[in-house]
Length: 194
Image (cartoon, rainbow, N blue to C red; front, side, top):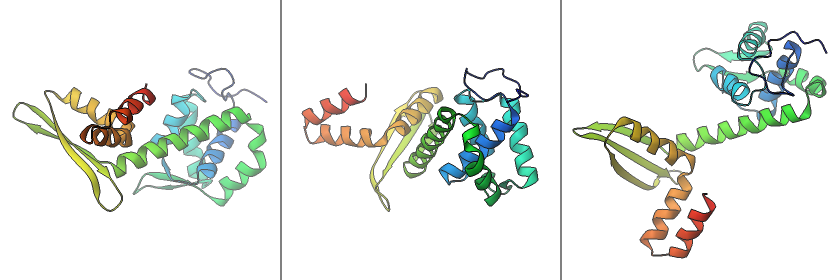
C-alpha cells in the first residue's frame, strides 16, 4: 500500500496511508455503534499513536463533507452511516487487526469513562479559603452517596475530580467498608487498586 500520509507521532504498525485512516475511522464508528465527537475521535487516534493528527483531522473532515460519516453540528457528534458501515465491513481487512482492535478498545474505554462521569457527578465550588469538591455516586435514579471535600487550591480540586471519576465504585466500597468496620474488604480494595 502506498504511504501518502504524514507519519510524525505514529507508532510502528500505525497507519501511514490516508485510505487506511479512512477505513479505520469508518470501522471505529461502526464498531462502537455510538456517537463520538470529533475531538474524541482525534483523541483516540492520537493518544494511541495510530495516525498523524493532521491526517486524522483532514480525513475526518473529508468523510463528513462527503456524508460517509454523519455529523450533527448542534451536538458536535459523529456517527456511522450505511456508507461507513459498508466501507468498514468490506475493507476492514486492509487495516491491521491489531490497529482495529486497539482503536475500538480505546473508544470503549473513552465511552465508559464518559458514562462514569455523567452518572457520577463532581462539582467544584470556590469558597473563601479554597474549594469544596462535591462528589455524587449514582445508583440510577438516586444518589447512593454524596460527600463534600475541602481542598486548598483548584489544582487539588481537579485531582480529586479525576481520581474520583477513575473509579467511583471503589470510593463507595471503601467508604462503606470503613464505616462498617469491614477492614478485610478495605484491605482488598486497596490491594486491587495498586
